[in-house]
Length: 304
Image (tube, rainbow, N blue to C red; front, side, top):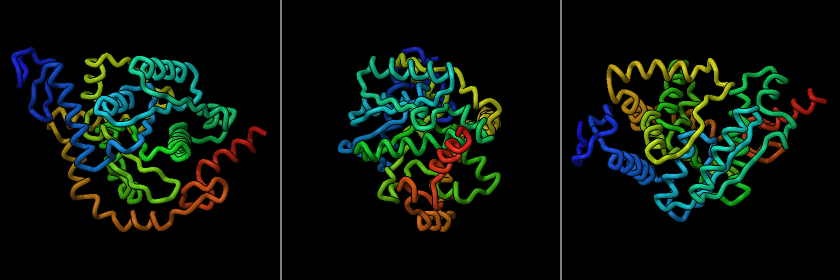
């Protein structure tokens, strides 16, 4: 099996594109796809300061690596969630990566804010860990980006992440979430930094292959709190469909962006109109007190 563009042996077959590529042409293909996504959706320019949320996983490390290689000004933010050995190992991977590739990194420990890690917080509040984690990470990423002068916040969401979320929201017709699902989420509040997903059109398999070929050492273990997560269940279903009908995931996602999202413009406008400043912290929310401040207050009350 030879590479489509040279005589070297192919190392991967991309069924969604009907391509067989050697290592060199595959990594070049991924980088070109990311750059095309940046330009097509006008995610950012070389003048922007980009904060990349890095977790120690392949997707976030690939994101900052590729953006850095393409000449964009990037820095990483690792949020220590205090999840035992998992957080210890993922932090080690993130720090080792940034040292190897000479990329600035910032470390934020949620225990400084809460006195507890995510697992303990979720047990104390009797809420699902992923729900609590999502609220806290989104808040910290945006707050850190805003307070440190970054103009763009980038995350490592890949195609599989996006499609699983879209699939879930379509099944339950979550109009508010569907309205906000996109590769670019513009700034709609003074303290809300523009959010982008440069790897949104790169599959999980492609991202893993890229990391291996570029010798990016990432944490391979799943977060212990993600066990039994609905998103993993949906990913497995979508992978089975993809196996039978290659490119289904990419078409599903792009067709939603191109043709489906417009039907939720009313819901998007209603949410944007409802955005105001949290009376406690001043950051954007649709409630009187944002979810982050609510969680923090409940933790303080219950931990006494």
